[in-house]
Image (cartoon, rainbow, N blue to C red; front, side):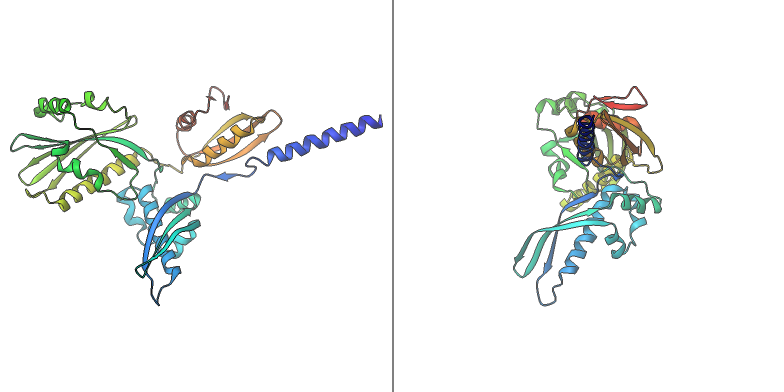
Length: 358
């Protein structure tokens, strides 16, 4: 009997020890989703008797904050955050690091990585009545077609100044990476054949070659001193339109072309943000179960949950020797979470109230 009790308590002790060690591998507390990381902010300052490194760091904080905000919000909302103080910006920062410090020609040069608290940033924007968007970068096929309406002349790809300068004009807060088509005489002939009905031509024969789910057909009609811009945009399953008119000299200076490109790109960024809003007023609880014996899969799940912008927070609600059940607060349609999990090869059964990763 004594031996039985010793064995019983010994096994009980081992069970709880394993449970504690196993449980320590996971997030036992409520975990807010990841910080916003702004990388490789380059700062240069004259290195002389008045050099103050704290001012250089503050300069990096200012620039990193601007990059983050421009990534998160539509251009129309930028004026709402123009008066934020440096101290308030610092309060939003979790951490930062400095790398590649150099002294060249009496100049101090360095790169900064700055981490902002996502929770604080979203709360700040919410207080300003600004709905931010997910920081999701995308590859997008852009087909730019320039037509001189007066001459009925088509300028495609290398003949098109906008094509040649498109990827030379960019900003460090852009989320859209543009893939430009290759020169193809068959494509040119196809577009030329449809020049009189170009706004209704679907470009399907061209776009299908690139196998991208995001695409923009950019039609530019030059007439006298005006440039009419008509864009058909497809971001994933969302179809959008953009129409703009620019005044344009016949000389078509590089600066003028550059300004028009940046203006159009800012509009495209706003369109992309529009379909990726993070509505923090929507807080949908989702429960997700995973086998407690699969430590590696659980850790990978937590890593991904922390990286999804629409995941406000998550916590382990139930933990036993069979399963771990996570409670996830999601700022959006649950199907978006399901799609994100599927994208990273998590096999999710969502047929029951508690989803299950198999």
